[in-house]
Length: 449
Image 1 (cartoon, rainbow, N blue to C red):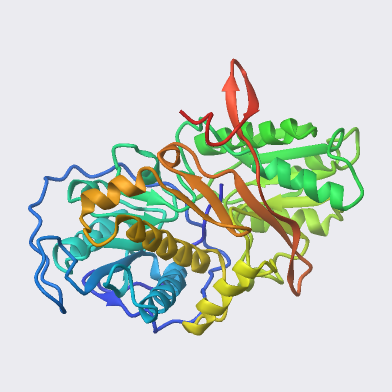
Image 2 (cartoon, rainbow, N blue to C red):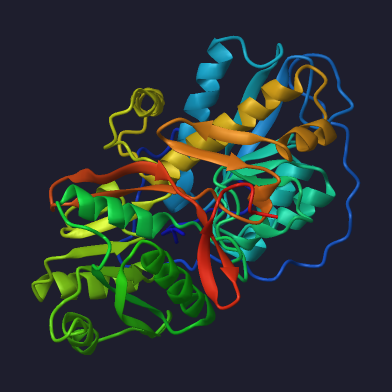
């Protein structure tokens, strides 16, 4: 499960142009916890009739005979490149004639400043004032508008890094990789351990009998992550030599990493383990990851928050887990995606950028399934029984299972300080299901009930 990093904000009433910022700025020392605050209690608002800027009037908000209006939402300082990628995708669709005779009008990326209250206000503005049909892409750890979107029948397509994607009652909130932060986890992917096993095999080693340390933060999500990641390591034949939810969670900071390094580096009978899973937020990955590297750790040091082009030099020696392929992959589909995004003015392509592309692609594929008679209800009905996939890149993600679990797929990439390379190619695995006190691999999606 990736936790994503998130700068300067703007007034809540503005829509930020997707052409203002190239690339994907990343603050190296700021961490954002991937969880939403409790949903606000709000009254059901009446939905005004959408009056499109082109074409005949329609009884469906944001839809005319010739256009479908959408807008993006998230923390612009970090995720706006996802909006640029979505616009680049929509431009390509529109040049090819649109969907069922309609062009997709993308009005920009609204900035929630990584604040739950502003996310709700900006999301409501998109719905009530801008009259969007849908919010695409949504890339934010604080999707507070999810409940209101569901009440107003406004489709949201985005990256499922918040609890709003994990509530089946929010049936209009759809993630291109499904629900990634269920609480408690019921069907986590057996992905991270499977990828590490594949990486060990590529090095001429075997996963069975290899040793692993798993370290997480000392809060509830850290303890849950420790359990789940230990389970995927064990399921792939690794022996856990160290498993502790011992790192202080933000906003607490660690000034001395040496006790953690010493414990890990001697956990395998006085020696270092073969693999270290850092189930940590980004600031703590920076601290402990660097300390392990400087202490001479030679095995696989892996985390789920470290991949970004801007972090290449800082991430030397890291192996980052991502839920989808990255531009270092060489498949034909990834090459096409990169070309489309770069044509839209984005040169530095990280996870949020790809997330915007995937959200736009999933939205468009659902539109095609619905056809000419587009209503929110028909869109939701199609999305609720949808399979989303770009072969060799992302998915498959199945719905309705996606309301409970993420797609168990991913990739590993390693930085040598100057470039990232794929160290375990994109692949999908089983999910883990708890039977008694033990997690066991079960097939996806059939075992997700």
